[in-house]
Amino acid sequence: MKTISIVTPCYNEELNVRDCYEAVQRLFEGELKGYRREHVFCDNASTDDTLRILRSIADGDPSVRVIVNARNFGPLKNTYNGVMASSGDAVLLFLPADLQDPPELIPQFVKLWEAGNEIVYGIRATREEGWLMRNLRNAYYRLLTRFSEIAVPPGVGDFQLVDRRVVDAMRQVHDGYPFMRMMTFECGGRAVGVPYTWRARKKGFSKNKASALIDQGLNGLVSFTNAPLRLGLFVGFVLSFLSLAYAFINLFIGLVRYQKVAEPGIMTLIVAIFFFGGIQLFFMGMIGEYILAIYGQVRGKPVVFERERINFPPASVAGAPNPPTA
Image (tube, rainbow, N blue to C red; front, side, top):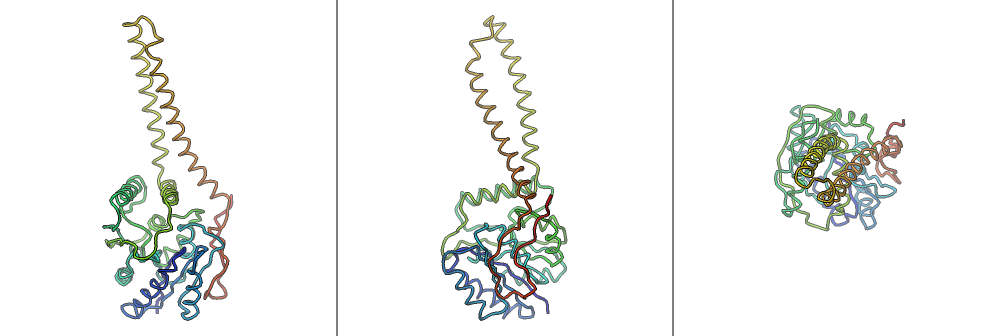
């Protein structure tokens, strides 16, 4: 009997974790009753009753496994660590505790996987959220997929069912800040997409702050595209050309009209100094993001530090694999 692993990261989701568990359990008692279930919950040091509820669930169901982090490491690292701890023949990389990505699609994902697809990915064709956030997300994903060397359709998130071969290949990509939604495509394999509606949260509120979303977005750009650096090179060339052209134009105007080259251009110089100063600071910050990514990689820290594992076999070793040291 094949095993399907489901990975659910959670942080202060006391209102949702039991609903998520029961939704997955019903699927494996119905459409997926021919498969063994492994549901891995990754608790990111919750401060509410989430962990107590997970302990209660795990005590009554050996198919549920729980990883308890020593502190909050953020959603990307937390989810990746859960995927690396899974043991299924196929792994659903991410099923949110709030069920915004619909678990009802999992049987369809499994059928497509059984048909020979190694990556079955959900495409968020419609989003039940505000106009501003919906369009910001769409613009970001289009930017990321447009400039990445890896072909990924816009709207693809971590809601993907991947074959064990892909998970083992991901294990070889020792990344200190993993961006899984692109990593699976980087590993390669036959892939197929399933469009769906990303639902609004029914209980509680999102713990993903705006600063965390920006951080995750920058991580994706830094990890999978060199477009920002190429943009800096292009803008530098264009601004240098325009500056030289503007200097010659001002020289000509000053000599022909004013017979001098001082006072008429002073305001222009002040504006230009602030403009080019801002451009330089922007690209210095962009380069700094790449340096931070390199720094995080060479430090060789585990992706997360775990405090406890529940219902895992004795041979399971706590902690995600270490990135290689320099």
